[in-house]
Amino acid sequence: MTRFLLGRTALFALGLVVASVLIFATLRLLPGDVAQAIAGTTGSPAQVAALREQLGLDRPVAAQYLDWAGGLLRLDLGESLVTGTPVAGEIAEKLGVTLPLAGLSLVFGLLIGVPAGVWAAARQRRPSGLVVGVGAQVLAAVPAVWLGMLLIALFAVTLGWLPTQGWPLDGWQEPGRALRSLVLPALTIGVIEGAVLLRFTRSATLSALDQDYVRAAAAKGTTLDRALLSHGLPNVALSVVSVLGLQVVGLVVGAVVVEQLFTLPGLGRMLVTDVGRRDLTKVQGELMALTAIVLFVGLLVDVLHRRLDPRLREVER
Amino acid sequence: MRRGSFVRALLRRPQGAAAVAWLALVALAAAVSRVWTPADPFRTDPYSAWLPPSGSHLFGTDAVGRDIASYVMAASGTTVLVAVCSGALALVVGLGLAALGSLTARAVRESVAVLIDVLVAFPTILVAMALAAAFGGSLGVVVVASGLGYGVTIARVSRSEIRRVAREDYVTAARASGAGTAQVLLRHVLPNIAPVFVVQLSLAMATSILAEAGLSFLGYGASAETASWGRLLADLQKFLGVHPWTIVWPGLAITLTVLALNLLGDAVRDAADPRLRPSGRVSATGPAAAAGPVAAVDSAPGVTS
Image 1 (cartoon, rainbow over the protein chains, first blue to last red):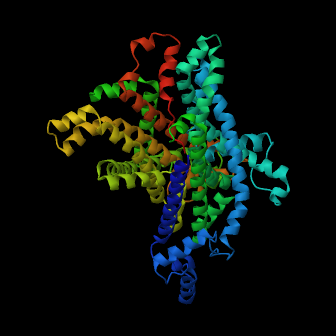
Image 2: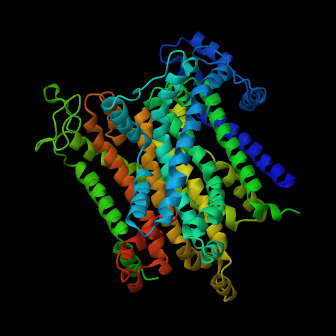
């Protein structure tokens, strides 16, 4: 386990380094002068020169990168080019919306995907199981934006149960209202993620149904459904855990689009706004934060999977 | 395998045939829209805003009186362009990385493998946002981001596939009988991994269409002069409270096209595998006959996001 942990942590660290290099390099690919681009066509030469100095653009690229990367290690992401506020503080504040959104989406996704997947597999030859399987196939193809709009049209506009958009002014000071604002966005991401999870769960359950130990348990007198529940599901759970890492990538992707659709003040929406404003320091920090979250969750999922799966434990020397 | 039997096996599956039919329709609409659409997709007319669907406006009109049907048809051209370009780029990137990661010297091979493992974790949309911050949003950014993003996935899948095939007995036999590397690669390895690439190609296209829709919705994809399903969704969103039915058309177009590509990928995978070909035995089992192919088809999930 120690060896695995060390190796996996090294991969995580390598991922962070590669990400920081790629993000930094991509934003420096900007054609022409970054300072000129930020100042716009109306910027005077003096303003451009001041910007260049503020950005450290007059120094070698490697030194600029090391400065930024050194700041990353101290969680200092620099200041916004537009407002001058520290980037790290703003990101931490926005995570107060994005993390609960991602968490709630994951809960919805698991609640929808796993039971329905097991059910569809157990009923695979009956029409009901087939309908669920086909439904998941269709839902996995639905763009998040559209699903969000359909949910708004149904639950907010027609039924009036939930708010269409927005976030309470006092944020989490009003937990009830804040939670209500999160339900539809989280459901949007959760349904799509759930459809993908459903298909994974279904195929894992189908192969579990084929296993000798499930059949043997069924042959010893219990029903196939019961044998599946007591002997097959632990194995299904394992394969679900192993794909959760992929799902989290989906949560981040979903957050960027869905926060914009529901005007939630989260990290994704801030990124969209800052890309539009060309606030490069902030974009750099936001991309790094989101990538770090994805990589970290990938690490967590792998470690969890390793701990849960006894077969992987036995391989240890 | 003979090519004819593969195509027949593909079209004999209802999902495969439906997917091919829909994709052909989209391609046809895209081609025809270059020269003809029912109305000018960009012509605005304030007096005919929000007309319901009718004979002259099949899908109705939007807030500025544009004919939605014409716009959706014109936008299919954008979709086809993005999907084909992203798919081609993903294939080139994927094949290149996979070849580097499986056929080169050990040190290079292993480091490329680690690099692939690292890169595969980066979400496409973040790559796109980084590129958009540097270059401004455009369809080119969408194509590059989804091509690179899915290319890494293809590299990961096909690297292990190339390594598996390279160890097969028939490759060893070909080597032993004096075939050179290029001949082994072209005659023995490529034909055996081609179905994997076709499956991955269709999934790459599906992913790029979803990415285009999302990014165009955010305003970092298609420009205002380019018709795009995602952009139309963004335009219609503002009036969602008053005219919710209008969003049905672009959304349905995206969903059906992505679904068709996912189904096509599944059907290609099954058709390429002779063991999964529907035989007389399956179709003789009555009600279960319908369940057979479908169960085989979605036993492995397709595109994720």
